[in-house]
Amino acid sequence: MRCHMHRYKPTLTGMNEPSAMKPEIVDLIDKTVRERFAGVDIESVSVDEDVDFDGGTVFRVRVVFNHKGPLDAHKTSGIVRHLRHRLVAEKEDAFPIVAFVSKSDAAGRKAEAA
Image (cartoon, rainbow, N blue to C red; front, side, top):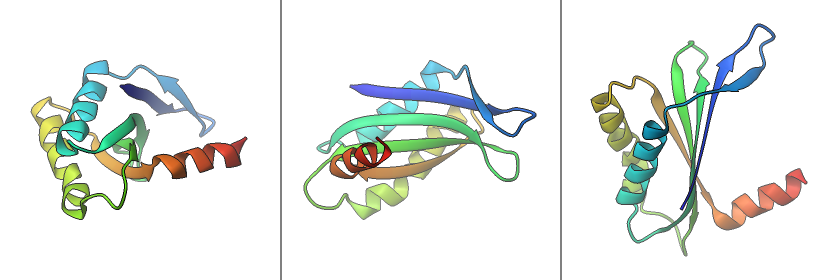
């Protein structure tokens, strides 16, 4: 199981630099995604903490999956609700923004970046 986490905080130069993020929050997000998509080969779940245009904290969640055919649209559209419910229960106000990327697309993006 691969799970990545990054937390970024704004600096005076407008660039972002990494800062500490609670590992238990990353684990909660990873666990929730894997539970909701049982039966789907989830390659990795990465979480980046960021700031939205209003200054609010958001979690950018990237789910890389290896699955033949499309994912269940009902589950992909509902994952934010499930994540939000669990995050609020942990007194975490950040809003999750979730992106699903197939393993083949993720590999293609890495090759383009190289």
